[in-house]
Length: 359
Image (cartoon, rainbow, N blue to C red):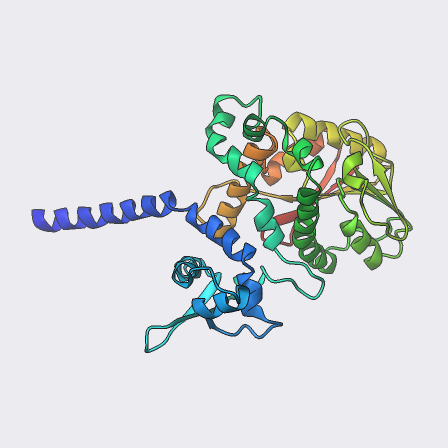
């Protein structure tokens, strides 16, 4: 009996050790993903939708026809990413491995509108952000200064504003994430009916506002409101006026206010201030429509929860130590404290939820 107990304990310990080893090696995954995106491996395999299985040598021959890269090392990278459902692997009877894109991997290839999730991955792993990651613990030890600022000498926003190439990547990243969500939202949520003037706070390029106004012709005027430097290069859209400003100070008046993926970059005190500014800018029965990550009350091991909490640590490290992903109840409490009396939540996307606050 003692022998059986000892064997069972050893097996349990092995499982635990394996779990820790996987986590310890976790950095290999995103950096391998960045590498294959930069080498255009997904695009090479996709080839206008053919998704033809290719060996590492065949991929190398297409992306570097004059030679140079090591096919064996590329294969090692592809094998790792296969375990994370980016690629599928076919092993022939001769031992040759060929790879093609899974549905997850296809999100890295540009669609008919030129959008993909690849810029989002690249933007999250640019050099300045990578310098901040070793300082995650600093956000716990000293929450007064973001790890990004400690590593780079300035805030992330200030850093981006000085780098046109990074700003271009951010625009592509936000479009690649926003457009698919907006398409789904506009199919399932009808809260823009009856709105004549819509204000998009933190609207960046104005793409989301433009999509809403195309779907709802009753919206005659759109105001894209963001920091002056963010809207300076925004493209022109019919019926949309780009306005520079700071939501912490004031918000333009409108029948409804739309905000997407922005509360997470503010502290609770700042969120309350923005809610109050929105309340002042809205007429009686006006509404604030927010699309934000909403974390569950109870922590579980689901992929969704891991994605949300991983994003939460990203915000804490890069943008604001006390900015955060919030629960539904936390949003409700902040809105109620600012004067909003009616609240509804819609689960539309695995990552973002639609929160409606009515005056």
